[in-house]
Image 1 (cartoon, rainbow, N blue to C red):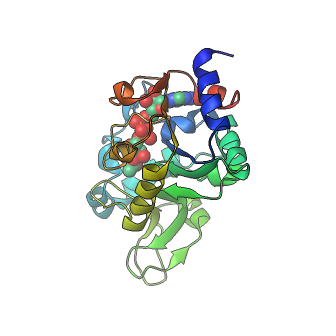
Image 2: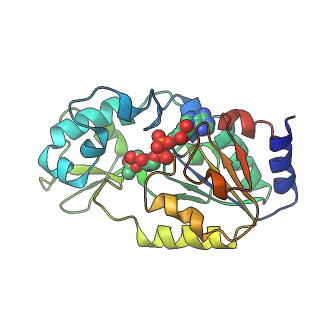
Length: 238
Ligand code: OAD
């Protein structure tokens, strides 16, 4: 085993307070494209930039176009957790991982068996009416055609945090608490470009910060260990 992966393995072996903070790169090995890689969503041709489509004002103004993008790009059939999701769940069962904090909206950590998952950006597996708040089955939203409407006439929306919307205060506070108290912090599969999520890293006070990401990030120089490899391949060796 390579030295850097062995080092991370040792940190995990000697800790019962590991926290994981991840992003879209955690799910690429499950077949879900990330946002900012060359083959990611932001580099694909679309009528509007995805950052615009995924914004609150765009959703209000043009829900048809939003749902076209949502169903074509965010809802991907047949995806399964990969070794990174599965190993994280196993490490939680072993009492090592205290929390998985994710920017992903795909629900794959829970499907892998992780229990304490903090979804900073929500989930496309939940839906509610933007007018009356009634909860709707996500399948109805994800697989119907056109703009899904509630009995009250309101537009049904995914329970995700769109651009221009604030993150859930309670989830953010919990994420900060876990990171502040963590012994080992593993950050993986995220470009660390989107705030406030990326800023969470600044709450870590320990000396075992591991970054596992294919490309470089603005935080590489802050980390105690940087591994530029596929996260599924790394976690299958931990
Ligand atoms: P990005 O697409 O910005 O970054 C994904 C990172 O994962 C990139 O740096 C890739 O190099 C890396 N990566 C891809 N595959 C990998 C693999 N198999 N192993 C290791 N690393 C890999 O995605 P996020 O940082 O998650 O927000 O983006 C943050 C937010 O931007 C998303 O939550 C989303 C988006 O706009 C909302 O929709 C609100």
